[in-house]
Image (cartoon, rainbow, N blue to C red; front, side, top):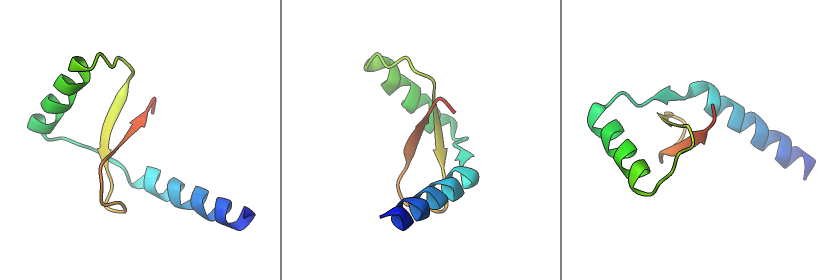
Length: 61
């Protein structure tokens, strides 16, 4: 169990290091409009990584 936890933490660290901010104006605009519509006010960064297939949000980077 400990080995699985350590492996997962290392993997997450690699993903965090490889993140790049999404620079598409169209996608960023859509993202912030959706965020506004649901009244979500936390600081969120929209990023992507070649190490993962789906997009995810990283809160309070």
